[in-house]
Image 1: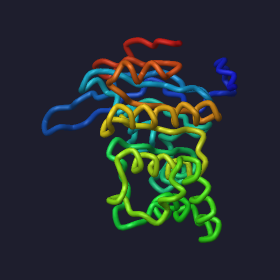
Image 2: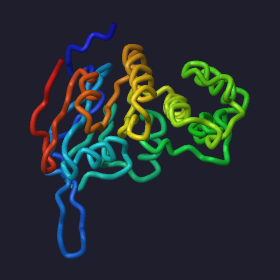
Image 3: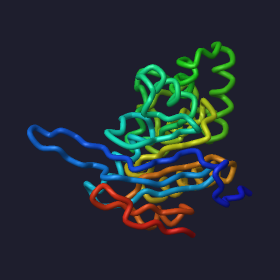
Image 4: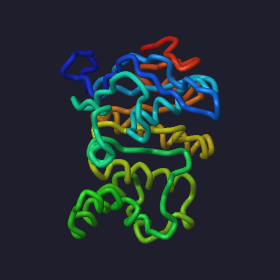
Length: 235
Protein backbone atom coordinates (compact mmCIF):
# COMPACT_ATOMS: atom_id res chain seq x y z
CA UNK A 1 0.00 0.00 0.00
CA UNK A 2 1.31 3.44 -0.94
CA UNK A 3 1.86 6.00 1.82
CA UNK A 4 0.06 9.05 0.44
CA UNK A 5 1.27 11.57 3.02
CA UNK A 6 2.30 14.63 1.02
CA UNK A 7 5.95 15.57 1.59
CA UNK A 8 8.33 17.62 -0.51
CA UNK A 9 10.41 14.61 -1.50
CA UNK A 10 7.28 12.87 -2.85
CA UNK A 11 6.37 15.68 -5.28
CA UNK A 12 6.42 14.61 -8.93
CA UNK A 13 4.80 17.77 -10.32
CA UNK A 14 4.69 21.38 -9.09
CA UNK A 15 2.80 24.22 -10.76
CA UNK A 16 3.42 27.80 -9.64
CA UNK A 17 1.16 30.58 -10.95
CA UNK A 18 0.79 28.87 -14.32
CA UNK A 19 -0.94 30.79 -17.11
CA UNK A 20 -1.78 29.58 -20.61
CA UNK A 21 -2.87 32.25 -23.08
CA UNK A 22 -4.07 31.48 -26.62
CA UNK A 23 -4.27 34.14 -29.30
CA UNK A 24 -7.59 33.75 -31.13
CA UNK A 25 -7.53 36.33 -33.90
CA UNK A 26 -7.43 39.70 -32.17
CA UNK A 27 -8.49 38.28 -28.80
CA UNK A 28 -6.51 36.57 -26.06
CA UNK A 29 -8.06 33.60 -24.29
CA UNK A 30 -6.79 32.83 -20.79
CA UNK A 31 -7.23 29.06 -20.71
CA UNK A 32 -5.32 28.89 -17.41
CA UNK A 33 -5.30 32.00 -15.26
CA UNK A 34 -2.74 31.41 -12.51
CA UNK A 35 -2.85 27.77 -11.37
CA UNK A 36 -0.73 26.71 -8.42
CA UNK A 37 -0.90 23.12 -7.20
CA UNK A 38 1.20 19.97 -6.82
CA UNK A 39 0.92 16.24 -7.44
CA UNK A 40 2.59 13.60 -5.29
CA UNK A 41 3.81 10.09 -6.04
CA UNK A 42 1.29 7.29 -5.78
CA UNK A 43 -1.86 9.42 -5.74
CA UNK A 44 -4.84 9.10 -8.09
CA UNK A 45 -6.13 12.52 -9.22
CA UNK A 46 -9.23 13.50 -11.16
CA UNK A 47 -9.42 16.87 -12.91
CA UNK A 48 -13.03 17.97 -13.39
CA UNK A 49 -14.93 20.95 -14.68
CA UNK A 50 -17.37 22.16 -17.33
CA UNK A 51 -16.41 22.66 -20.96
CA UNK A 52 -13.97 25.56 -21.22
CA UNK A 53 -12.87 25.29 -17.59
CA UNK A 54 -9.25 24.59 -18.52
CA UNK A 55 -9.02 20.90 -17.61
CA UNK A 56 -7.85 19.72 -21.05
CA UNK A 57 -5.35 22.58 -21.26
CA UNK A 58 -4.06 21.56 -17.85
CA UNK A 59 -3.55 17.95 -18.97
CA UNK A 60 -1.77 19.07 -22.16
CA UNK A 61 0.61 21.21 -20.13
CA UNK A 62 1.24 18.45 -17.60
CA UNK A 63 2.00 16.11 -20.49
CA UNK A 64 4.47 18.53 -22.06
CA UNK A 65 2.29 18.64 -25.18
CA UNK A 66 2.03 22.41 -24.77
CA UNK A 67 4.05 25.11 -22.99
CA UNK A 68 3.09 27.50 -20.22
CA UNK A 69 2.73 31.15 -21.23
CA UNK A 70 3.80 32.31 -17.78
CA UNK A 71 4.64 30.65 -14.50
CA UNK A 72 6.66 27.61 -13.52
CA UNK A 73 6.13 23.90 -14.17
CA UNK A 74 8.53 21.47 -12.45
CA UNK A 75 8.36 17.81 -13.49
CA UNK A 76 10.42 15.29 -11.51
CA UNK A 77 12.70 18.13 -10.36
CA UNK A 78 13.19 19.65 -13.84
CA UNK A 79 11.86 23.12 -14.72
CA UNK A 80 10.03 22.29 -17.94
CA UNK A 81 9.76 25.93 -19.05
CA UNK A 82 13.54 26.10 -19.61
CA UNK A 83 13.72 23.17 -22.04
CA UNK A 84 14.00 23.24 -25.83
CA UNK A 85 11.75 21.01 -27.94
CA UNK A 86 14.18 18.07 -28.09
CA UNK A 87 14.73 18.06 -24.34
CA UNK A 88 11.00 18.37 -23.77
CA UNK A 89 10.32 15.34 -25.99
CA UNK A 90 12.98 13.34 -24.16
CA UNK A 91 11.48 14.23 -20.77
CA UNK A 92 8.01 13.32 -21.97
CA UNK A 93 9.22 10.01 -23.36
CA UNK A 94 11.04 8.97 -20.19
CA UNK A 95 8.69 10.18 -17.44
CA UNK A 96 5.13 10.15 -18.77
CA UNK A 97 2.60 7.70 -20.16
CA UNK A 98 -0.52 8.83 -22.07
CA UNK A 99 -3.96 7.24 -22.32
CA UNK A 100 -6.32 8.98 -24.75
CA UNK A 101 -10.09 8.80 -25.14
CA UNK A 102 -9.68 7.95 -28.84
CA UNK A 103 -6.90 5.40 -28.15
CA UNK A 104 -4.51 6.94 -30.75
CA UNK A 105 -3.29 3.55 -31.96
CA UNK A 106 -1.61 3.22 -35.36
CA UNK A 107 -4.02 1.10 -37.45
CA UNK A 108 -1.31 -0.35 -39.71
CA UNK A 109 0.62 -1.80 -36.75
CA UNK A 110 -0.13 -4.93 -34.75
CA UNK A 111 -0.87 -4.82 -31.03
CA UNK A 112 2.74 -5.78 -30.34
CA UNK A 113 4.16 -3.03 -32.54
CA UNK A 114 1.85 -0.42 -31.05
CA UNK A 115 3.00 -1.34 -27.55
CA UNK A 116 6.64 -1.28 -28.65
CA UNK A 117 6.45 2.18 -30.23
CA UNK A 118 7.81 4.24 -27.27
CA UNK A 119 10.65 1.75 -26.89
CA UNK A 120 11.65 2.28 -30.51
CA UNK A 121 12.13 5.98 -29.80
CA UNK A 122 14.07 5.12 -26.65
CA UNK A 123 16.46 3.04 -28.74
CA UNK A 124 15.67 -0.37 -27.30
CA UNK A 125 16.86 -3.44 -29.20
CA UNK A 126 14.16 -5.43 -31.02
CA UNK A 127 14.36 -8.56 -28.84
CA UNK A 128 14.12 -6.57 -25.62
CA UNK A 129 11.19 -4.51 -26.97
CA UNK A 130 9.34 -7.64 -28.04
CA UNK A 131 9.82 -9.21 -24.63
CA UNK A 132 8.50 -6.07 -22.94
CA UNK A 133 5.46 -5.95 -25.27
CA UNK A 134 4.57 -9.57 -24.49
CA UNK A 135 4.91 -8.89 -20.75
CA UNK A 136 2.62 -5.84 -20.95
CA UNK A 137 0.06 -7.54 -23.21
CA UNK A 138 -0.18 -10.30 -20.63
CA UNK A 139 -0.55 -7.71 -17.89
CA UNK A 140 -3.60 -6.15 -19.58
CA UNK A 141 -5.07 -9.49 -20.67
CA UNK A 142 -4.24 -9.31 -24.38
CA UNK A 143 -1.44 -11.84 -24.83
CA UNK A 144 -3.57 -13.75 -27.35
CA UNK A 145 -4.02 -10.61 -29.48
CA UNK A 146 -0.41 -9.57 -30.09
CA UNK A 147 -0.65 -10.22 -33.84
CA UNK A 148 -3.97 -8.43 -34.33
CA UNK A 149 -4.41 -4.90 -35.65
CA UNK A 150 -6.58 -2.25 -33.95
CA UNK A 151 -9.44 -2.71 -36.44
CA UNK A 152 -9.75 -6.32 -35.25
CA UNK A 153 -10.22 -5.31 -31.61
CA UNK A 154 -13.12 -4.07 -29.52
CA UNK A 155 -13.05 -0.62 -27.96
CA UNK A 156 -12.09 -2.04 -24.57
CA UNK A 157 -9.28 -4.08 -26.10
CA UNK A 158 -7.96 -1.01 -27.95
CA UNK A 159 -7.90 0.94 -24.68
CA UNK A 160 -6.00 -1.92 -23.03
CA UNK A 161 -3.43 -1.72 -25.82
CA UNK A 162 -3.19 2.03 -25.22
CA UNK A 163 -2.61 1.41 -21.51
CA UNK A 164 0.06 -1.20 -22.26
CA UNK A 165 1.77 1.28 -24.61
CA UNK A 166 1.62 3.97 -21.90
CA UNK A 167 3.38 1.57 -19.53
CA UNK A 168 6.11 0.56 -21.99
CA UNK A 169 8.67 3.07 -20.68
CA UNK A 170 7.67 2.31 -17.05
CA UNK A 171 6.70 5.92 -16.24
CA UNK A 172 5.91 7.04 -12.71
CA UNK A 173 3.08 9.24 -14.05
CA UNK A 174 0.11 8.20 -16.22
CA UNK A 175 -2.05 10.91 -17.81
CA UNK A 176 -5.53 9.81 -18.88
CA UNK A 177 -7.89 11.97 -20.93
CA UNK A 178 -11.48 10.68 -20.52
CA UNK A 179 -10.17 7.08 -20.75
CA UNK A 180 -13.66 5.54 -20.70
CA UNK A 181 -15.35 8.16 -22.88
CA UNK A 182 -15.72 5.89 -25.94
CA UNK A 183 -16.57 2.72 -24.01
CA UNK A 184 -19.76 1.11 -22.78
CA UNK A 185 -20.40 1.06 -19.03
CA UNK A 186 -19.17 -2.48 -18.35
CA UNK A 187 -16.00 -2.10 -20.41
CA UNK A 188 -15.36 1.31 -18.86
CA UNK A 189 -15.55 -0.21 -15.40
CA UNK A 190 -12.98 -2.82 -16.40
CA UNK A 191 -10.60 -0.12 -17.63
CA UNK A 192 -11.06 1.88 -14.44
CA UNK A 193 -10.32 -1.22 -12.37
CA UNK A 194 -7.10 -1.68 -14.34
CA UNK A 195 -6.14 1.94 -13.65
CA UNK A 196 -6.92 1.44 -9.96
CA UNK A 197 -4.65 -1.61 -9.88
CA UNK A 198 -1.84 0.34 -11.55
CA UNK A 199 -2.24 3.07 -8.96
CA UNK A 200 -2.07 0.52 -6.15
CA UNK A 201 1.20 -0.69 -7.71
CA UNK A 202 2.64 2.82 -7.34
CA UNK A 203 1.76 4.73 -10.51
CA UNK A 204 0.66 8.34 -10.10
CA UNK A 205 -2.48 8.80 -12.21
CA UNK A 206 -3.90 12.13 -13.35
CA UNK A 207 -7.22 11.71 -15.13
CA UNK A 208 -9.51 14.23 -16.80
CA UNK A 209 -13.17 13.26 -16.53
CA UNK A 210 -16.54 14.98 -16.53
CA UNK A 211 -18.29 12.07 -14.80
CA UNK A 212 -18.64 12.32 -10.99
CA UNK A 213 -19.06 8.55 -10.57
CA UNK A 214 -15.70 7.96 -12.26
CA UNK A 215 -14.03 10.76 -10.35
CA UNK A 216 -15.02 9.10 -7.05
CA UNK A 217 -12.25 6.54 -7.66
CA UNK A 218 -9.62 9.27 -7.30
CA UNK A 219 -7.99 10.16 -4.00
CA UNK A 220 -8.10 13.86 -4.93
CA UNK A 221 -10.53 15.70 -7.19
CA UNK A 222 -9.52 19.08 -8.63
CA UNK A 223 -12.56 21.10 -9.71
CA UNK A 224 -11.75 23.72 -12.34
CA UNK A 225 -13.67 26.76 -13.56
CA UNK A 226 -12.57 29.70 -15.72
CA UNK A 227 -8.95 28.54 -15.85
CA UNK A 228 -8.53 28.17 -12.10
CA UNK A 229 -8.76 25.38 -9.54
CA UNK A 230 -11.99 26.22 -7.73
CA UNK A 231 -11.75 23.52 -5.07
CA UNK A 232 -9.97 20.26 -4.17
CA UNK A 233 -11.75 17.33 -2.56
CA UNK A 234 -9.98 14.40 -0.90
CA UNK A 235 -11.19 10.92 0.03
